[in-house]
Length: 128
Image (cartoon, rainbow, N blue to C red; front, side):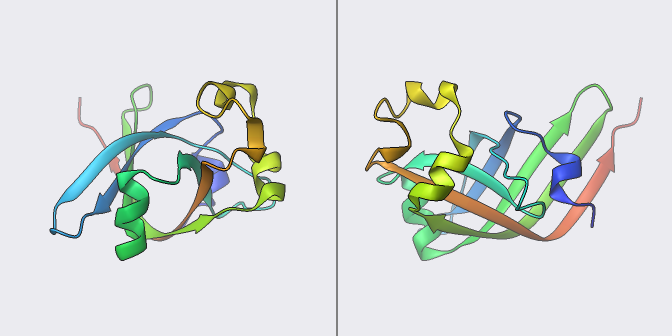
């Protein structure tokens, strides 16, 4: 599998799919956060009381989908996701645009981090 850092860059938007307790798949757009020391992981920021966090606490298997319209490629990653509330990692990942969601900065009590680690992928090329 290609290293995640070769596929995704800070600020890209992907679709994160979680499994709900009523066995439904829920998708939402998420902005990719990256750390150089975690080349095989994708990070996301979210608020701790969201539906996705509740879903992940019950089932941490998730799917990530990304389409690159310029290369006509699609990447589907299957893996697991962990929830972190670590100030040092929040500071590592912090960028000014996040201030819109968490005005208190990385110290925000509502901000938690999601670390996705893939275990399988599919690369698809779109036909012309």
